[in-house]
Length: 453
Image (tube, rainbow, N blue to C red; front, side, top):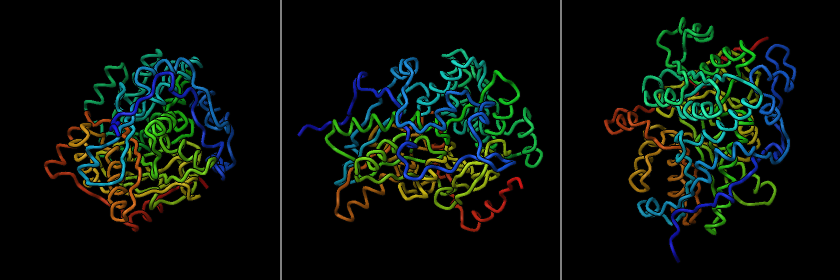
């Protein structure tokens, strides 16, 4: 039997619709609430920060939503993305399991973030918006949005979490090259940023703080809108092209995964690959586990509380039903900057609560060890975020061998680590710290949640 290492789709096979998991969820998510009245809010309440077409997608119950042709045209630059069988990794492990990975790092941004950046920039352009504000953690999202905005003729202001701004200058330069303005967050540009700096002048920042700053600027100008790179329903919707392609590619490989894995920050990366497979489980009875992996230093899914909380630090977003560590929580300075978010997306939170997906937490050094092993066998240097998915895939393979039951493992390799060399340098120097939140630390973080009366 011939070894097929790389499973490709033709351009004609690229999906022309995004998949909306809301159509098939047995229990629909609780509604977002107004932070003052605590009443459910409608689409109009979001109009100050998002274009109406994205708001419609946010609340849609349709199973499939057509991808606009202008978006498809840009997708063709890098999609369909390849699916690989990791034969060299399997050989190194000595496993009898089959390991596949969907590689999303082969586009201009180096990560999966381009899939929604292009769509969001397009819809903003269609509505006559002139400028977009956004946040970015490690910089993948900011890079993706920078090119998309440049393509559609939009200005972009990016608030980059300070710890990443300082440690990943290459990402800032990349965004500048695409004509975006990049500001370290917390900043003195906004009231939200100034309050954080008054309390802690050396604050490393967080995605929650950066979101507050970006939203504050957006609501001041009717021709400026805000864009989010994860968490929200419409963002997850756009990412499902990953899983839809993977379904077709697994069919070409004459195989089907027993477990689908993705790392977890806000939910877009995991959901993008997992939700189409979850559809097959819900509608067609396919037996597959959906596993997401988060940092032990930011364990909202594994140790957080399911409750209504803000999506940002300043309390500017509606109250969302989510697993959270508290909107004021500042995670440790791990190098997987895209995973340093206090809460989980509403859809993932509800599905975890209902037992349709699983979550686990991993320590930073073990994940970098897995990433280095992967790079030495498969030739791709993974993004620090993707290392968490790789580590979980190795766990699954080793567990399968111990149990004597070979399994098919699929994970999302969400991006490359070419801009994260400093993190790997610290790993090789033995200077990469581990931190695992204790139950007491989690309780303390949740106790600090202050919601309006």
